Amino acid sequence: MHAFPSPEWVAAYGAAINASDDYRTASTDWTHGSVALVLPAQPAIGVPDDVAILLDLDRGVCREARLVARTAAQQAPFILTAEYRYWKQIIKKELGPIAGIMQRKVALQGSLPIVVRFIKSAEALVDAATRVPTRFLDEGK
Image (cartoon, rainbow, N blue to C red):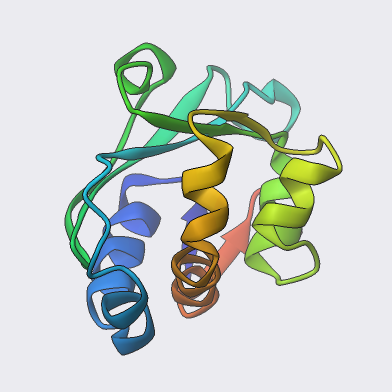
């Protein structure tokens, strides 16, 4: 089990993305750059500072997945920001990423029309996240 978010979880997530045939197929035309998944600080559960998962995505491949400070993620063309509870709902498939954007639970910086065009890619990224053995920080050990 990997704690979300942690460098180990992010490494496993990158591997899960690259193991996903669905992601590869849905994303062969993705040439729009990196995607940052930003999590604002939640000191009460052990996330003292804002962090981001930076995914270097290109044509169906995750070239790199790493946990970075929020400032390092600001150059990504697509930045999705949500509270911990919403990322948890997305990973558990209780909230779709596009629905989260539309419901204003997930803030998007970047082109919504491009994101909508790659909805299958977004769904495959969520599917990959569900394959990572995850321990949520706000749940018991």
